[in-house]
Length: 230
Image (cartoon, rainbow, N blue to C red; front, top):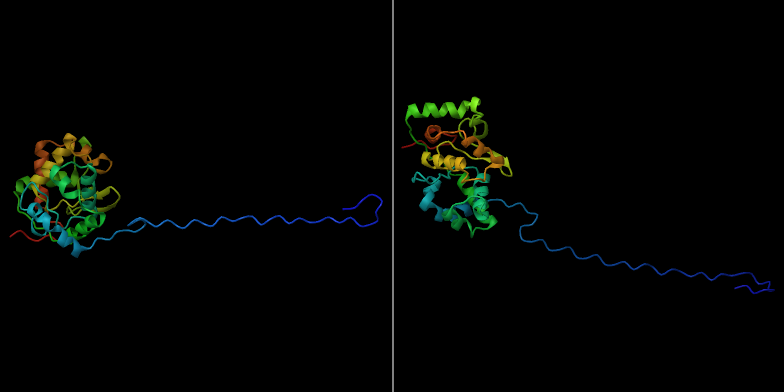
């Protein structure tokens, strides 16, 4: 510091600012089990887990009980969606709710992978009924706003893999009584886990006779890979 009357040069003492403290980066959180990982179904593991399903859905997923669906050859992503919907009560069925409740995410993926690899069995139906059902399935009923079923479920009833909820199941070779029951439930609003309400809107314009014709036709429609009926 320079005083008055002094010839000494003015000197300013520099004061260094302290270095800013840098907070340590927090450790990355441990991912929860399965977070960020896409689960892949194991068909072999699914075969073991599916042993308890055979009582209703039959050996290899080919149910011989008309009101229970065949799972053999069904799209894996459709099966996994249905099991999750049963767990979340988006699809209501007391028996399936109890069966699905204890399943883990890996269990669900394994079961879907297993059943998709099984070969579905075919059926023989009355040709006259089948012809009426085929007309509805392939052409729909445009004057009533009914699109062709084949546009979503495929020309051979093979279904289509979708994204998210938009997965369309295989219907060919399915049990007729089960198909009729589901269409009536959609029509009555008793089932509502369809993508974008499409099935509820479709079923709403179907008569009981239409439903029977469609179900009968589809049960005899051999989708790719079907095992001929004995």
